[in-house]
Structure formats: structure tokens, C-alpha cells
Length: 494
Image 1 (cartoon, rainbow, N blue to C red):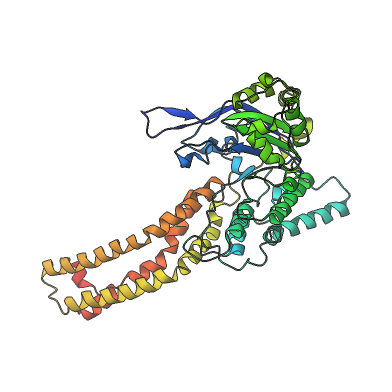
Image 2: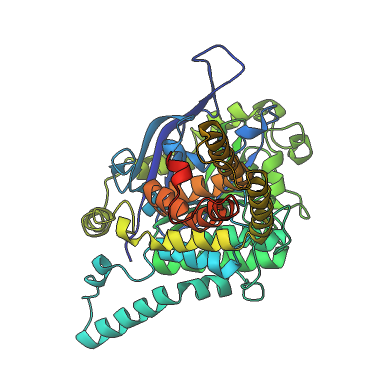
């Protein structure tokens, strides 16, 4: 399987502050460098700074330098490469290579778990891409055919595999729901959000706090599955967790510790405790390693100090930890690997796989998938359809009775009658504004992931409103009662 080596060099994020003068911005982190190797499972952990603007949470997340180049309100300075290819070159195709699972659960509440995952699978191709089938040539003809059949079967049934992998088989036919609609639990909804971004042949996967709402056993099973997935398919799976348990912490290969925008440590997980012991800090026997690492650089680190090390040589602030780390052997080794040349195999992967990745897996003519989804959402909004139908019939009878057998020659009366009908139809669409606002976040998420084109969504959403438009066209009722012949609407043409 192909792999992608991600390198981040002296990257800084900054965003504009709305309460300061124009062009004022705030840096979110100090320049940092990192290397995400192939077939590894890194763990970023960080202490969230106390900032009054809580909407900065997504922006200050350490995974987002790979995700936010497409964000207009975030400025990224530095160099990010994938197998030596700059991210700017892959800007339009980057969502087909790197997937990002946000902390926020943004899904359509009226769709079931299986429908949500099947739609994501269909938008990512729904089957083994033709460009990948030609690479099954390394074995004998019998072995190649067997491997090709197995790959096709896996892609065909991939939604069921993801459902089984995430433990969603019990609730697969239950609607996702949200804060206002009863559906699956919060933990199951988080797993749906995670599974939605697992489709497609992604080489790098970024997951933000996927353990929210899950117990330790479920978190361990999911992380164990992702680790096996990364090792067998040579993927890079970066997962950030909130206070991981010791068992879960042991599953990761690398760990990156950030505090106040500084990188205090980034290296092998197995060497983290030894590194900080050399600085004079030792983790107590019954203390979780992740909690111990997060307490460093804060006012809680005094309980971990070793007496044998002079206190004056111990770092206190996050910036001091970062300065010490840049002089360490682990940092030197990482920089040597960072500035090393790209292997020949990865250069071949660029030509065979990365260069052939399209911007969208679906053609514009295949927008019927999005159209079917929009029609399903419209059909399941039963409260709106029933309420709107009753109101349309009542208003139609009211308008027609008021204009019962009106004089067709009276232009003022005809124009007033026509205006009232058109105004009712126009203002009646305002009832769907909350529905469109609620679906906006889902559209932004799926559009950033290159599930479909914006034009496909606009066309599909417009087509899904046609049945409601026909139902609201009650002129036949008003024309019949008002003695305006439906077949010859002379009253409206005069």
C-alpha cells in the first residue's frame, strides 16, 4: 500500500481578532516543526489556554496546520509537504489525501446511522477506483485476481465494515438525532462522525478527541482498530485524546506535548518518561503518564521534581521546555529525518497514486446521489409538510372565498388578488430558513472534504423543493372558486 510522509517546518497559525483594529491578528502557536512518519500512530496532547474567545478552540488545535490551509480566516506561515509535495500544490486535492474528523458532531439528524455512512461511502467513490485496480500486478495472475476480488468486496461492503468496527451495528437503523431530536447517544454520534471520514483511500487521517462520550473499553477498542489499520495499510493516523488512560496511551507510537503554543516534546512515546526524568521530573507510580505530561510547564509540576537535580536547572515555563527540547538528541534526530531526502518508493507513490487523485470522486452527472439524499431529508420533515399542507389549503379557501366570483374586468381587484397569492407563496418559504441554517454546518464540513461540488448541492437542493412548490401552487383552488377557469386563466393575463 502507498504511504505519505508529512513534514511540517516552522509553521505558525494566526487569526484576525474581531475586537481589535483592522489587520490586527493573534498568533496561535510558536513556530514548530514535526514529522509524521508512515504507518505510525502519533498522539498530540496539549493544555488548552484560557482564552475568552471559545471559538478559537478549533483553530488552536495542534492538528489543524494540515487542515486549515483552506480556511480563509486562518493564516498559515511555514512549509507543509506530503512526500515532498508542497500543500499549496495539493490544495484542491488535499481532502482526498488527508481526512479530518472535527470534535463537533455535525450530521443530519433525520438520517439513520447507516444512511449517513452509506452516503459518505458513495461520495468517496463507492467502489475500488479504476486507477488502483491496475496496481495489482506484483503476484501471480491467480494471486492478483484473488487480491483484486478481495479489495472490490471490501470496498463494496465498507460501510458495514465501518459499522462493525465502531460498534454501531446495534443502532445502525436509528436516526442520528441532535439536541432537539431524539436519536443515538452522544458517544454513538461521535462514532458516526468518526466513521463518516474513514471512507475513501485516505493516506493521512486526523482525528480530534474521538473518545468524547465513550468509556475506556470502547476507546481502547477503537484506538486498537485504528492502530491495526495504520500498520497493515501503511496509513498515518493522528489522534488527539482528552486524558487518555494508561492502556490507551501505550498504543501510540509518538507523542507531542504542547503548552501555550510551544512544543515541549515530540518524539517516541517510549522515551518520553526517560527524557523528562533527565530534566528532573519523575512520574509517580500511580499517576497516569498523560496527566503527568500535561502538568509539566504549569504550577503543578513541583510535585514531580527530583531532589537530586538542582532546582535552578529545571525548566519552569513552556518556553523553557521548548528551548531545552531543541537541544536534545531526540530533536536532533527528528531534524535529520526531516531534512533527509524522500525515498524512491515514496517518489514512485507520488507518480502512481498522489498525482492520479482527482479533486472529486463523483462527476457532476453523478449528482443524483446528493439529490436522493436531499429528497430523503425533505420527505422526512413530516411536521413541516403536514403543517404546511394544512395552512396552504386553509389559506387557499380563505383567498378564494374573499374573491368569490370577482369581476375580471376590474384590474385593481385582479392585481390585488394576484399579489396576495404571490406574496403568500413567497413568504411561505421563510419557514424553511431554520432548516437551511441547521444544515449549513453539515454542508461546510462535507464540502471541505470534497464529498461533492457546490453546484451539485445547489442543484439537488433546488430539485428537492419542486414537490413542495407544486403543493403550494393553490391557484387552481382559488381560480375554481373565484370563477377563473383553470385552463384559461384570463383573469391573470388581463
